[in-house]
Image (tube, rainbow, N blue to C red; front, side, top):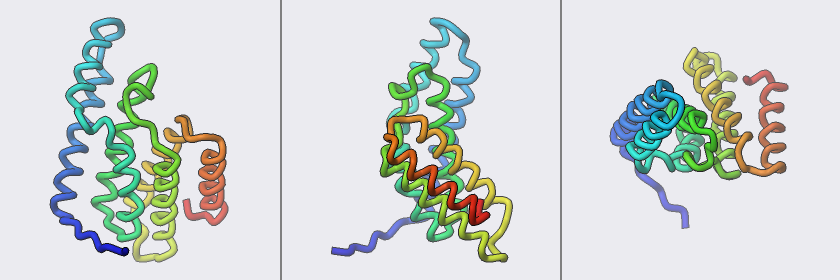
Length: 172
């Protein structure tokens, strides 16, 4: 029943790197889009160019806890950057639900789990570095975006409780 999954980390790094670059360019293009009909046309063109990356949030959210527990900082950095870019893409549209797939409750809770794992790195003095703070900030931004979505009041309360616990324990 328990299967071990082997991951080619160099391949995952390359894929996340390409996704991060594509998403960064898409966000840059969306931010300079003019107001009105020409801007709407440009936004739809950028969205079409994103292809399957538009639906990448659930996969990225599911990947983050495993990367955090394994302390694969570089890969987690790339994955959280992609999450942040996808949230930025959605903010460029009036109705974000038509653009980027919202986090599900499961995805939002996975991000909280990743945040908790990263926050626990601070308990070990040799692992505290600025990257940890950056990862926490990105995960919190993604969670903030998830809370504004359609995840339901109960999940929203669970997320708030989890973040509050981390604050109380001075881990974030």
